[in-house]
Length: 144
Length: 145
Image 1 (spheres, chains in turn purple, red):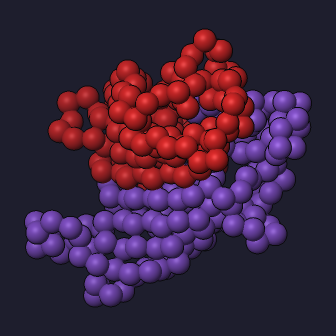
Image 2 (cartoon, chains in turn brown, yellow; image 1 turned 90 degrees about the vertical axis):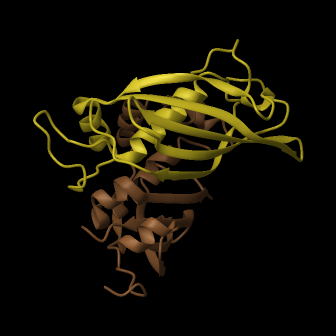
C-alpha cells in the first residue's frame, strides 16, 4: 500500500436510550445525575438527561477498532470536542473522513515501514447536528 | 453522586496531583462495558473467559472516573473536550494504575477551565498503556454536587 492511500472507515450508527445510558453508568461507575436522574436533569439547562460524553466517544472508538483491529488498540489516538449533548431517542452516526497518510514519528518506525492514517471524525444526530467532532489517527504496523 | 465535602475541581490549582488510583477490568467487566456501548467489533479477541483485550476507551473512561470521583463536580460542569492515545493493548484482567494532574487552569467569564492529564500503566509494563487529557468547565459560583 502506498503511503498516500488512506483506507475508508465504514460509518456506524447507534440509538441512544435511557436504558443504554443507565447500563453505561453501571459499567463506567459514572452516576452523575445529569445522566441518570430524569427529575434532576429536567431542572437543568439541558431540560432532560443526556448521554455521557465518553459513551458517544465510545462509538467513534468502536468505528476505528472495527476498521483497524489490534492496530487501534496499540496505536490509536482521538482528539475531540463535545459540542452538543446526545439525548435519549437520538440516533447517532459516527463517521471518519480520510485526511492523510504519513510516516510515523521516530526513525525506527519509519524504517519498519509503519505508517499513520489520519481522519477527521464526527458524530451527528438524526437532525444532522454535530455533537462531537475532531480527529483520529492510527499507527498501522506493516507486519499486520 | 459526589459527597459535598470533597474539593471542587474548580478549586484545584495547576500542578495538583491526584492520588494514584488502582483498578482492574476483568472479562466480566469488559463484557458489561461492551454490552453498554453495544460494541460488536471483533477487535478485542477471545480469551478463555471472554474478551482478551480491554477496549482502550474503557480504560480511559475508568481512569477519568477514578480521578474525578476524588473531587466534586459542580452542577452544570461540562466535559468540553477529550484527547486520548492508546499506546499498548491492555489484557482483560490486568492490574492498572492511573495517575492524573491538573495540567492547566484558567478562567473564562467566571467559569473555571481545568485540563486534567492522566496516564494509565499496566503493572510490570515499561510505559503507559493509555494517556489522555480531559477539559472540564465548571460554571461560576457553584458548589460541588
